[in-house]
Image (cartoon, rainbow, N blue to C red):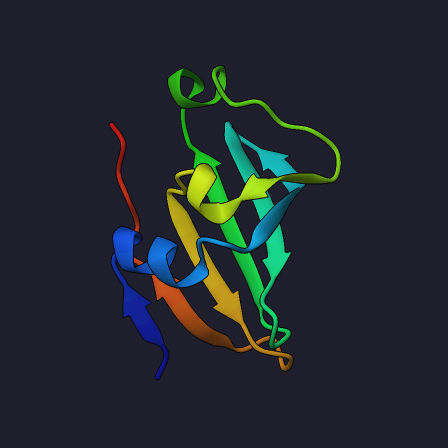
Length: 92
């Protein structure tokens, strides 16, 4: 069983991870980073056109997780198993 955190708990625990842009699909931007212990952190931001038009995205590192206000987040171990998940945040 994996851990489920609120948005503020997730940001507190993984907030210093540097995130890089990985994908875009249906108004949702995906970003990925790695913890010092090698876990993969994936977040998404957006979901509708009102959210994403204000989002600035660059190649490479786009900032830390805490600076990005994610709507969704999941952490995977080296076996691609979920170890932690953020409760989904509805903006609208």
